[in-house]
Image 1 (spheres, rainbow over the protein chains, first blue to last red):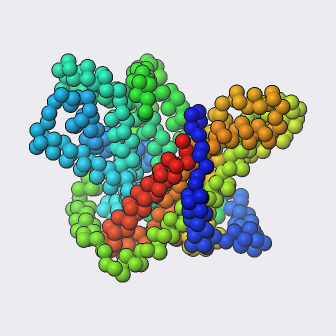
Image 2: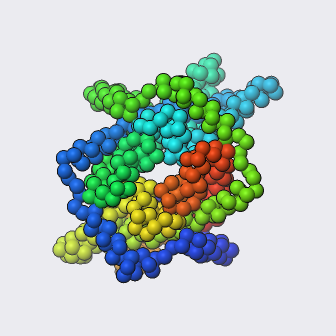
Image 3: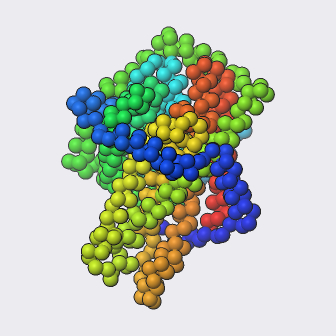
Length: 277
Length: 290
């Protein structure tokens, strides 16, 4: 893994800059570790932890946590699928090797208008992906709650849009990176652009793309658990209520529910990825 | 995906994955069932997007965003939160390293209880002094990283009050869990041959750790820590939603007050911030890791 990579000690400027950055951040964020670990801070934290225990295992809370967990799972699952659906076409449109350069276009001259249109498509698709990716899930969630009202559906849309941007970028990189020889073979045998995409590019890119999608699903299960903070359903909504109403024992149950679900999804995703690659 | 020949060879595995008769069928069935149930549970209803009210709100949202609010006073007001977001991400990552490094070392099997360093230890010593701390460290790391930083932030706001400090702690704890796990994976993955050589040459445990493990692991450790810093800037930008300082607090305010021109400005700032940190982090990586 580490073979061939060596660490070079950074120069004086970099080290000094890094030290300055740390000091500046330390002051700016009002970090007060002394107070945190001083006797008062310690006792405050200890009291809070004591209040968390024991977790509320009453039937009502368990059912509530279970429902929240299942809803969170559903949001992350559908959201991730929506992301793939959004990402694929955009990724194809940002694959320059299919649009205007690379082995398929060797010895072929595109007219200025045709080339301009193709570059334009690439630039626009890239820009769309950038916008989707830049806006964090939670902001997308706020926007969609504003558009379609409260509930899990805006959560699904939020995950789909943000993750769509992330996956679109990753997929695009994978699609541009495939082995060009089969594409050339298809092209010289007279295959059209679409055929090359489906029989040359996608089969090569699929395992890596699927692996990325599964990884983002793991990220999304965590994200889905918090979108409820802005009213987009799932466990987050219940956690928000529990924290605000000082229901610490219930809070611990809900946090345990997140822990269990995140661990399960990680294991499932790891299993599928092993099976896949 | 730099090695395109490898990806080409593995292309056959998709067919294998989908085609393996029993597994394929069961997988497809389960997938469809989950999808159906999830669609219903998540109350997915695309028609909602095209209802009059949604379209009206959309028009209001997009119309309100342009032109973005670039007035001098608003930009001046945003300067502090932007800087604060950077500071939170830096300090949060620093604390994450402080948490992740020791726990990661304990959670590395080859350092704490198995492998060449421990061949001569008694079984009891190995178990009590090696495996128990190892298991505890792993559990702690998994709890730290499984609870989203957002929830950590919410709890720290309750514990230490509003401001950037709870944001720093939230990123520190959640990312500490992730860093610790990845550090231990990197350490487990080092080539054991140099370790054996050092061991055979009579090097002490500390010697093996310093001259065998560290030089092999450090490039990946540094590079992954920088990557986490890039993630931290995104996280610190949204933690403000629960009162943990930074740009997120302003974003939520503007969103709740329907000041969409301010929202667009803040999103633009966020974009610049993230792109800037990615750039700096990439530069540092190129400088430090060869």
